[in-house]
Length: 313
Image (cartoon, rainbow, N blue to C red; front, side, top):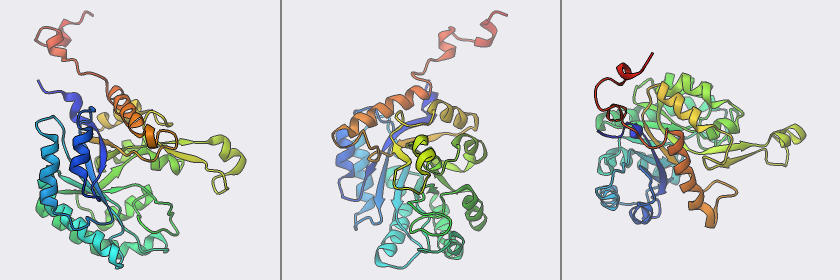
């Protein structure tokens, strides 16, 4: 039978902005990742996405690896030249997702810069209602990452989908079932929010999960607070941060969630540079363990039939 453990896959993100996504997939395709998320930063740089999708799938070959989600990160709500490229990038990713085998596009909502969060809602509704319709026509879901990008409720440059109160607002503006979240516990810990109760409430809106964690330095907070010169939190690769991913994956399973957890690397202050892939492969194996380890077919283990009938009272 198929491996039901892989109803939650563990993969990694691959930068697609520089035109080398397929080549980079080919380089690490045998390390054990079960999915990839190619992502663009602000612009696709004019790449032919249909051709890029074909090359990415060729790099994967016949391996049991999926591309469920593409990333398009930027600010599509304003009208600077790069913002317009981001908006076009969203349209192009939606239109070409099927060439990658993807069914979800993830990124930031955008924001009216340096204004309170609520000032972005009219423009958010205008842009994302149109993109949501485009995505629905293509059978694609939209997922907003919960990253503040150093913004807050009063000001910011990139994203308004970084807070549960904001989720209530944006999903009221776009109540479509195929508009949701690309969630990760890291950004909740940065806000000193407990991620586990959030899963119980919001898992139905989680379309994709990023494998990124955080370490909160409570000793720094007690001495310097959260607005001082000392850094009070570090973004971490899973397995090196504060989150118990066994609990996270258990809560996701209890909520009936399935999909990919793609590791977002290149943030860890320790496992970086020469140690980057050491940290990512450690995270890959750690998350597979938190998922339950190697699949054991219960029915086969009991020689067929209903295993519950074979248990002694």
